[in-house]
Length: 318
Length: 303
Image (cartoon, rainbow over all chains, first blue to last red):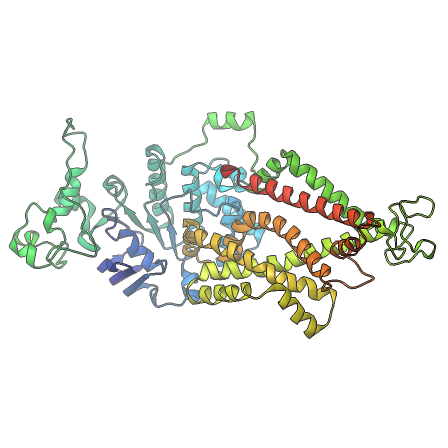
């Protein structure tokens, strides 16, 4: 099957005063047209940095190696001009915090319009009309009036809708949503997820959903990739992974999710023991071994490669 | 699929009750500024002073450089001859000269500040946003400029290009942009890592458009405050240079020169010192109050 967005063997390194940090290691992900791929992991597992690198948005001290292909262009080696033709136009991104992702001094309509004036060379009038149309499509109530408002006058949910509208203006093939619901309260979260689902169906946009919320993934994604300490440890069909996770970390994550069926008693919130490792001092062998329930000597000595769908010796044996 | 509709009847009722008008940071700032009595008073006085200085000299019976040969000794206020505040020691009308001097001082203040603003904001924003080598080069150049003594710099310019009016505000502007560049750079550094800059980059905006559309408008608040504090600084600098004889040339005049002349005869004819000195002090006071008010208005959180 064809792929629209192809990440091959991506490595991201940050040089810090304490030495080099390997934030992302050997990550390969392929996105099919119209598919929704979920990317889960704890904070610092490299899930955001994978796509920040792919979009050329790494912090100054970061370097990326490998390849990220979109429509015949390697985004990692493309120059800024070529990159800017793709970013925002063919591949769009929405960020975690809608409170800070909009330029504070510019009215919403103008901010939306700029994207079209920039990428589509529209006139200001056309751009405004298109912006209004898009705001209506993402269900912003009283869209006309919102065009002349400043970002600080909108609620968080509305701002995230504006961000989504902005991302969709040029009809991108790929939408990268970096924790789009984390900063929002639960009811608004549900609305935004509905909206993303709608976007997928109506526009055929492939969505990458970066989150640490398994519920969000379950509700929206077709496939899911689980990251731990900068590597993908398990990847596969959402239903299959939720039903029978093969990597102990995925299993651990799933068992941490409180469910309505198993009533939570006072002390019963399950956790994975230990902490995510320091990326500068990764344990030998499998990065997850100090916290793993199935650990044995081989796990301590040797790092399992991503074979098939899982990077775990136990899964191979099973 | 469930499509979400937020436009409930309640929302309609709310908007009918009172339409919420979009208010920008600047509109908010104006509102707060106008609530500040000291700032408003200053603004009014400044406006009056500006109108007087720019229109006044043409309405007076005496021009700033005309010598009244009947009163060469320097007289007091005299309505009959049209010297409403008297004359100086060579018989020129004091009011006309003070107003004309004010015109020059204010012009220098505004123009030199504009020069400083243009260079300072450009250098600061570029250095702050691009960082790295560009930042190093620009900021070390600023450091270098800081270490050049102003009077020395001005004297060299005078020697090279001769004395002329334009040269003075170029010279002053060249010195004043340094602080502006540092302030803007600092602000830019803190803006650079904001998410909306990342969002703009992810949206495909180029470097120049990010600097012009996203960085500069967001530092303008701080810059506006600094500008109102720079104008009086420049006026003082101009006075200082004119006082040393490096500024404008006779018969043109400025507040600094008038104060210089007045100081020479303050025992025999104190009006010639007091009138320009008072005008200048009032103007500077008002500019400082205005700057203060603007600062409070733009940043109400940390008053």
